[in-house]
Image (cartoon, helix red, strand yellow):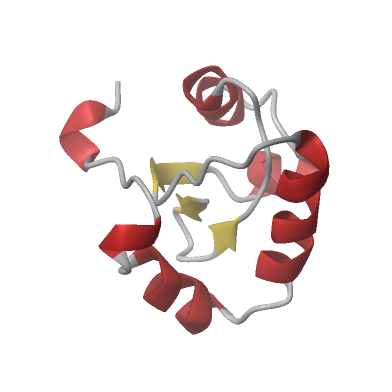
Length: 87
């Protein structure tokens, strides 16, 4: 999940998260992030396969921004990247 400069949260799936984040930052990512540039990576969650990742993405996209932020705070469920780790 990415936090955008306008405070919105973008949810997507990727095999190489850092490369995908870089594409979003360079305006080469999803249409949404071209009009809502990403500020930082909020969370990364690993799934066993693309089908599971797609199901999780669908579920996350149905949540409000506040619900997504609460989910990101659950340290035991995901790996969070600090701002200092982003290039």
